[in-house]
Image (cartoon, rainbow, N blue to C red; front, side, top):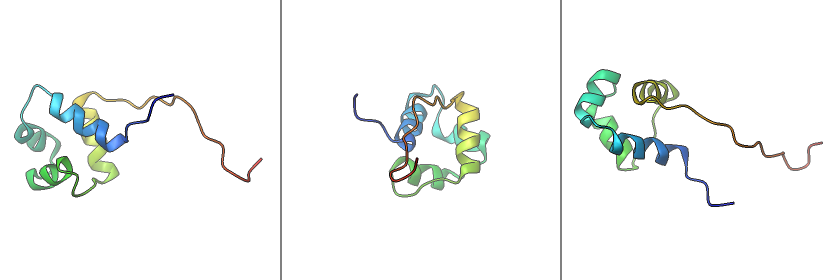
Length: 74
């Protein structure tokens, strides 16, 4: 199995691949340009609400491919 890519990095990649500007993404998702810029640079994270708005805007979904078992739990 290959190395998993962090969810935040997958969001960043989707933003980079979007056919619209970050300015437009910011305006249409109501996430400030500064916050989006800092997120893209990896300086800050985003709230679940902001991630939901980005995912909806970009047409992203989450696919569960497996669930790890907790250590020590049966």
